[in-house]
Length: 289
Image 1 (cartoon, rainbow, N blue to C red):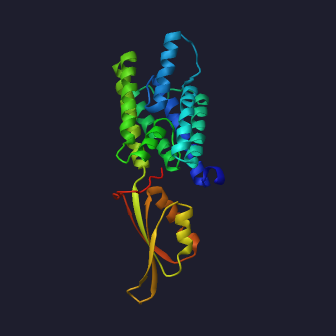
Image 2: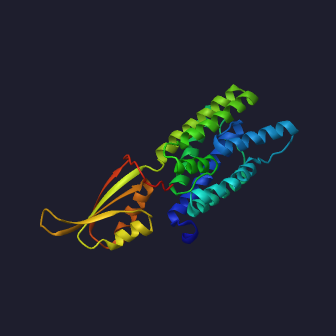
């Protein structure tokens, strides 16, 4: 697992549990109320409904999960080419779990009130997707397209792409199945998005100053080899006792900074860190999604 996904057990657990929670939200709160989520899964649900209506099919099996996986297959190649092997394998694993769970978890209506369904479903779904993204994977679909374009163009917004695709899905759903379906689907996605934002803020730029008295070779190698980041370090003098001090400065993404913090105790070097999050970085700063 470490070699293929570059995951520890905590991230692996988050990817699995997050995928299951996401599918529970869809099959317990969205599908039983004939609503539609956004992105590729929303598109898959819309295709499923149109196929059933056109061909007058009578089936209790929800095959939107199968359609969802089929649409993602060509997108996996884009992830592999533009977003790296690790992201590709993590997303392949997460999407496979989601497609399987969407087929296995029954469509059960928990409560009758539709507004309660969209709010509770949005909270659970947003929490689940947040867990998936914080593990370094994604739900596939528009995430892959958006992140690939964002890596090539710093001014591109992943959110805007998702909003555009969702707008098309909801308009088609509204025209075919009524305004009420469209409105409640939008409410679900709004709640889902708000919770997701609280769980995960993609690629926030961070910086860290690390101060230590001993040779920081282990720290430097970790930043270079494990985080794939460059750094600047220099020798200084401590103002209190005039002792020799090493200072390391590096720019990271949010989750790279978390990974660095987790591993600081392993270096067996007395250090302290000053960190800044949510700062603006211009120029050739590489986006490692």
